[in-house]
Image (tube, rainbow, N blue to C red; front, side):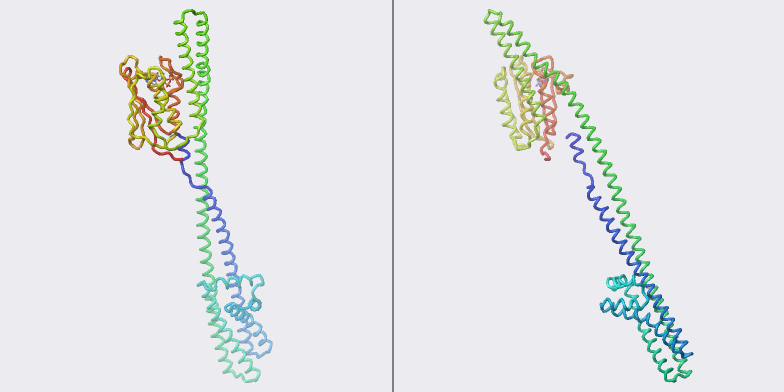
Length: 474
Ligand code: ADP
């Protein structure tokens, strides 16, 4: 597998998922902060309301006490006026609990001294949070306070009636004052409980707010950090990919230079030799010699034909996409052998097949190129001195790979040429080929994610082995 394919396979976290996480976290953070600040601000309005409530109640008690001593009507009026503040809140509370009319609720809250701007918030919080424990507890305290305010109002009315009918003796007055004082004390406790409950709730909300803020900020920070590391990794990978592509381009360029140079040379040389042979043949009278020249011309053209075929194979191998499909190795081998039957000396060679693996999934064009070149070489480089010339073609499976081996008892290859033979235009002294065959075969094998190797002994023969993967990821 080549390097760029390995890079393609490296999996990185999805950057869109990371960006989505950041976006959702920011949105949640904004919503949570908005509502928390809203709740805290309304809580403050409730605590403010309580301060008006308790101030009104205390003023009312003060005026009532003074009225009991001075019996001045203005003090009685002032008592009633101040008492209207907690009573207004009480009306609003009852209407809120009974889901009553908003105008009634607002009227009560206004009478309770609440700021006009806070009214909607007070109603909203009550509707949505009346079952939240700390808020429910505060409302319970509020209800207890309202009951005592009612009692205070009743006591005030009784005292007023007695004063009106000049029926208030000092003993009764002291009794009433004691009742008022008791009520006052109980109300103070209730008001304190109410404020404390709301303050505790506010503190809890503040803690939740800090916690959620820290939580979401950590999520955002870690997502951003991962995002940046992914981007840097991607950048490094694409840099590596560009470097690999650059290297490949340099190699391709060098090969192209070499190719153009050698191709022009190899294409021209048979023409030059043909021209020379024709010139000599024109002056030749001897028919045997002319036949000899014709044979040489034929050889020259055969060589050029082979060279052009090699160039076509080279270009098809480079250009065509892989087409992975079921192929029969047995059939491809038969076709390749048959294609070479017309070549001189082929008849003198015994072909043997040992097909353990036939049907495989691969690219038939590349397999044809590989088999043609290897079989053609095995024929070309057979040893004319040997009486029994053999070529054996084997297919088999080992260690999770398919193998094709082409074994001949030909002339063999000298140790120092074993690696060079796969280079472009490399030929040994035999000089009967273009030097492209093995180069193209190797390229085709690499296209199939496989490998090619040779084991050879000079004068004994060579075995070329092709390794192919069993599966292709498409
Ligand atoms: P060519 O067209 O010259 O055959 P190749 O690339 O196919 O080009 O082969 C390169 C060289 O490798 C050949 O010139 C030959 O010397 C050597 N060679 C290839 N196959 C064999 C073989 N089966 N036996 C001996 N030598 C071989």
